Amino acid sequence: RRATPRKPSHIDRTMRSLRELARFASKVTAAYPTATGALASGNSIAPAASLLQRRVGITMSAPAAVEVDAYKVGDSTNIKWHEGSVDTATREKAMNQKGCVLWFTGLSGSGKSTVAYTLEHALFQRGKVAQVLDGDNIRHGLNSNLGFSAEDREENIRRIGEVSKLFADSGMITLVSFISPYRKDRDQVRDRVGDKFVEVYMKIPLEVCEQRDPKGLYKAARAGKIKGFTGIDDPYEEPLDAEIVMEVAKEGGDGTLAPPEKMAAAIIEILEQKGFLSA
Image (cartoon, rainbow, N blue to C red; front, side):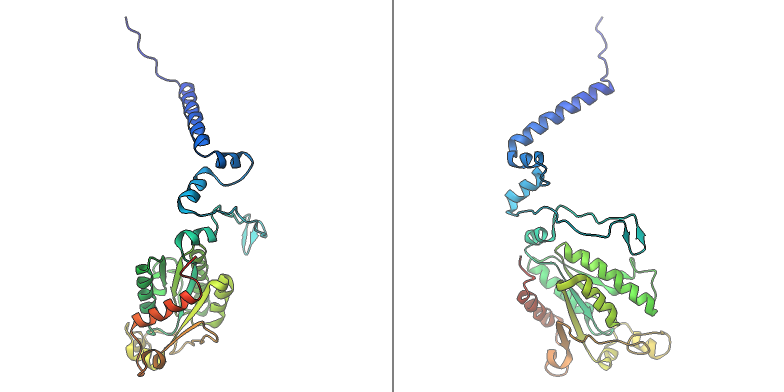
């Protein structure tokens, strides 16, 4: 009588997996002798990274040593910064652009988001990777637990400042559209982001913004239905030295606001001059 085949035991399956792994390792060693030799010597660049270098022509640098106050950051304890294997310069070279933060600030109705989204579209048409972070949109999720007190406004800007820095460090052209009325809060973001920070001041007079009033917010604020509204009963502190300033008289030439496409084109020229559109 024919014997019933024995089912593979746990040990059999383990041994088979080990044999398959050994065969795979032999193939990798034959295909990538330089990379596997580097691994044996302690180099952190893996065969997959070597393949990326060959195909894209990118030289990946090893993670830089970062000095941190380990295990204690602010109110957080038992944490430590973990440096990745792909640095910002490598990402930027792959994307052929440099990460940055364009911070659109100005009164409600000044055209911040309109210009930001127009610029995002124009950059996309040029093959660039850009993302708008809009103040209203962010309050639908990340900052939905914040109101409009001075403290909440400060935290609102701190959070989006940190997010925009992460985006810029990944090589993204990041377009932040927030009223951000307080100069101190904007300056703190500038300090965090560094020389990748570009402030875009939509310097549109209050009367023009109120006349436009696309969301009907000024009308509601004047009627007392909205309290603490920027420009009406809450201050807006103008930037003192913004890298880009858009003004009604200058942009339109006749006392009107220029089309957003024209403003976006002007900003793209500045980005080119600053070297953000290549790497």
